[in-house]
Amino acid sequence: MECFYHEGATAVGSCRSCLKGLCRSCATELEGGLACAGRCETMVRSVVAAIQQSARYQGVSAGLLRSARGLWLGLTAVAALVGLFVVAWGLSLPIYREIALLGLPFLALAFLSARLARSVGRSPAQESTERANPA
Image 1 (cartoon, helix red, strand yellow):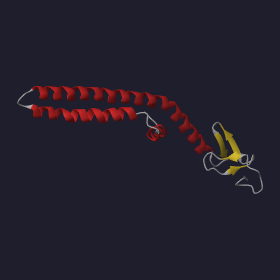
Image 2 (cartoon, helix red, strand yellow):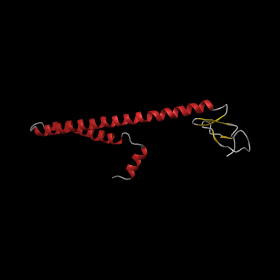
Image 3 (cartoon, helix red, strand yellow):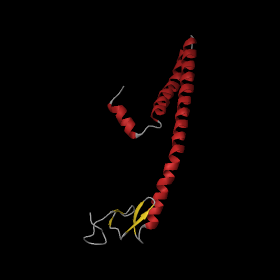
Image 4 (tube, one colour):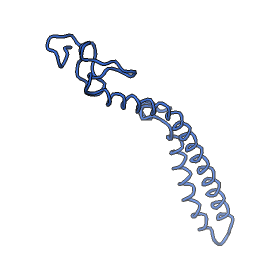
């Protein structure tokens, strides 16, 4: 690869902002990569700062996803218990057995929330792998 600014000069790398090839005289080495001297230094510093901030918050977001999974599992348990109770109670009434049908939406909610709890916190790659290779 050649330097974008000097024809025939061999590039030592590319700018982290504009991706142009840079020779030694055009490149400014920053903490997070190379930048065009006098042109892209501010932008590269901003990009590096954003990447570092994203890496710091990655652990926080993983904790939030674990909490979300716990909430979905809790909803699953409550919905399943209410649904089973209403179905059993409705079937125990000799005259009003139709009341048992009111438990079915709770059981459907339990099923849906269990599926959501299973998928929360998984990467798209993990989900596609599981779809391709079901257990």
